[in-house]
Image (cartoon, rainbow, N blue to C red; front, side):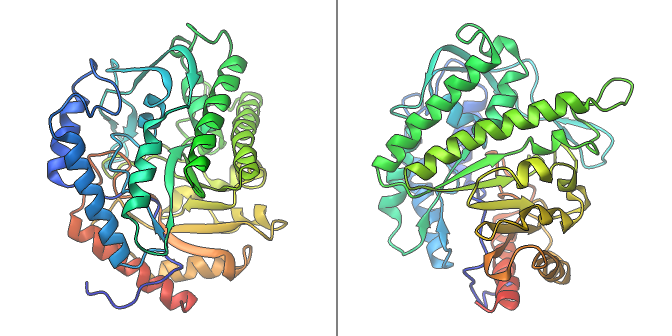
Amino acid sequence: MTQTQTSKRFLTVGSFLRPEDLLAYKRQIEERDDIQYPFYQDFDNYEKVEDEAVADIVKKEIELDFPEITDGEYSKSLWHLDFVWGFDGVRRFIADQGYIFVDHDHEHAFETRKDIGIEIFKPLSGKNHPFIDHYKRLVALNDSDADVKVCIPSPGHIYVDLGLNLQTYNQVYQSQEELKDGLINAYKEFLDEYVQEGGKVLQLDDCLWTIHAEDASNSPFRNEDGTWDAEAAKASAEAYVAVNNAVIDYGHELGLKVYTHNCRGNYASRHASNGSYEKIAHYFLKNQRYDRFYLEWDDERAGSIDALEAFKDNDQVEVVLGLLSSKTADLDDEERALNGLEEASKYVSKDRLYLSHQCGFASCDGGNELTHENQWDKIKQGQAIAFKYFGE
């Protein structure tokens, strides 16, 4: 596909396919639990190869006139855990089992890599986090007017994820309430240093909202007999939103723009869950105080765009519709995307809407099942569709 038109109304979630020389190191990291993030001292030339890869991806983003620049998330093995590994007080290890995703046939389970273990062995601290150096590297490479965006997992996601396994944190925190306070404090420490270094935009990524949706088939709130534990789901959702808002509000106090991206899992072109936005909009869309929401809407699992009605009283929020898919090699259905944008404009004014893919192209380092050429063709198509709809 040839490039015809860039658009400032087409945005990317953050991650891109890694080059092979960088992946060679990532595959070694996956097999080792005797090393700790960011691993630069453990492999000869690893940091140099990563630096060069980041420089190349930033150059490509600038060439395509992206309004936001990321480092491609090339410093990460997994979209969320590397940030947690970077906290003082955390040890990573290879677990007995990886995360369980839904395979392509929608019947069988698909297990991810297993280096997902987390042990908190002393109070968490977000000071001197490796992501600060990654941010400084990105700023130095960005010679455009584009915003620099750093993507980290939301504290609510990490709180719920860690809270499901008492052994993760009970050496240090004696209750989920203590874990929550420790986690929020560590995030605030990171935000302090991020802003001190000039950070202006932060994206908090999330994959667990829709486990709270009553139409989710694989939720921990679904009892063995198939009934729905509404009380437990409500309590979890409220705690989740409260944790996120504590960090969002602090970021706003520091002058940050705070965005979120939500999907239902993105690993090797597979998803982890279903559940519609309609069932959780009253919590996660209406009550979270983000400046911008990147939302997954590339297939029927997301449900109706009517869920955006939750924003009807919010005339400031921006919404990025992930109507395109980063999971497939094929180009997307242009008419579906245009129709989705038009439908969304009933609830969010057109000047506060954007288009994107539902997620990044490589939330985890192995990436989705498409080529680098496919990736850039799909991005160029997204830019063209956005220009056609928005006229800019």
